[in-house]
Image (cartoon, rainbow, N blue to C red; front, side):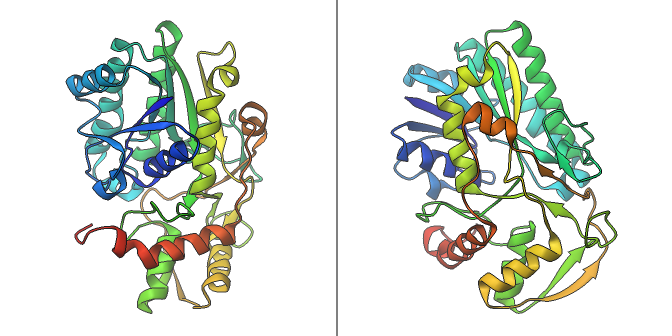
Amino acid sequence: MKVLIAGGAGYIGSTIASACLDHGMTPVLLDNLSVGRREFTAGRIFYQGDIADGALVDRIFAEHQDIETVVHCAALIVVPDSVSDPVGYYRANVEQSLEFVASLLRNGCGRLIFSSSASIYGPAPDLSVHEGSPLEPTSPYARTKVVCEQMFTDIAATQPVRVLSLRYFNPIGADPKMRTGLQHRHPTHLLGKLIEAAHDGSTFKITGTGYPTRDGTGIRDFIHVWDLAQAHIAAITRFDTALGDERSLAVNLGTGTGTTVREMVAAFNQVSGTPVRVVEGEPRPGDFTGAYTRTDRAARLLGWRAQHSLAEGIADSLRWAEVRDEILQPGG
């Protein structure tokens, strides 16, 4: 079985590709390398270009007529950047996705797995969400994900394609075999900033301490990226049975456990053995309280639950940080 992975040279896409290989599937990668890394494509079928390049997508399907499923991971994802450049985010995440699905329809591909986001939710009083929870995106990035989901739902209602939207919570860790990991040397997410502070001896800033959580800091559902990759394998193999009679469906992917920023700092200090100095600051543009997911639908439809602990995710992120510069060429 061949699987086309758009954004297949990025952190999540490349890890999904590794999981595909481990399960006897052949990943075909499409990535423009704007944020993805060529090193993650080594030994894999790879096409460099934009998902909106219809001629390139046509060529991929002509050369790999046995592609059965497409995983669409290609997107810009940095929340503050989306606030400062909403036009660029809507162009990259929405406009190009529309062109991409048009190419999939033209080539007769009827199974699309879309990488969505948990940032689209407005949390319930207990901060847990499920797939039917209200959608209240608070950043242009999150709104691009809502627009794409709604766009794909409209298209799937009358066109020969079905869509499974996987709403990711917060990925951490790396491929346990250290084949792939977070490509950025200076990541903007919480765990990356903690690793950077521990490495440099600098101060870690908690951005926002007035949220309605148990300790005032934001809350997230941190999922090991390898668990996330395994969920995609389940989605690929169970696609038809998971959707049943539905044309489009959303499934949350998380651990079902919420971790606050202060709790993540404490867990990091315990795993790393190098406590970081902490200061408190204001929230960043586009930040929100956060949430964690209920995992019933993923368990029922995909037969999947997260297997890796928060400590394992931190440990694998630290291992990747140690080997990253040996695997990736300078300049990334």
